[in-house]
Amino acid sequence: MKEEAAVEFVMHKLVRQKPAKLKIRFGAARGDVRKFERILSRKLPGTKIEIECVPIEVACRCGFSGGVGLTESMNFARCPRCGRLAWIVKGNELIVHQF
Image (cartoon, rainbow, N blue to C red):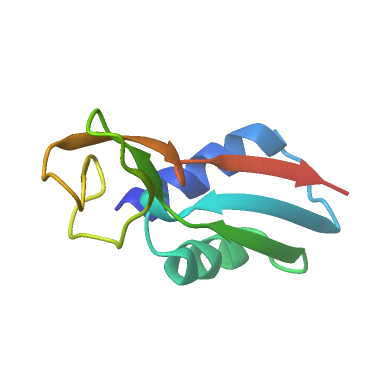
């Protein structure tokens, strides 16, 4: 479901364009990158799509800063050190570059 919303965001950015090539930075917190690419490829046949998947990193009040694994829902992340809710500082990107 999150992947489809991300595809709609990309399509909105393109505004009826059919670019020859797209480069996308896709944060792992946004969903399954393979599913995202599959859906986007169906919407943009013939477009070469290059996706860089950005891993999730968090920062916590306890001082922890670093990567975390994926969970069922990445609307939030817990600190692996203390278990509190942590800020997602990397891995929530969705940046589109057209060529």
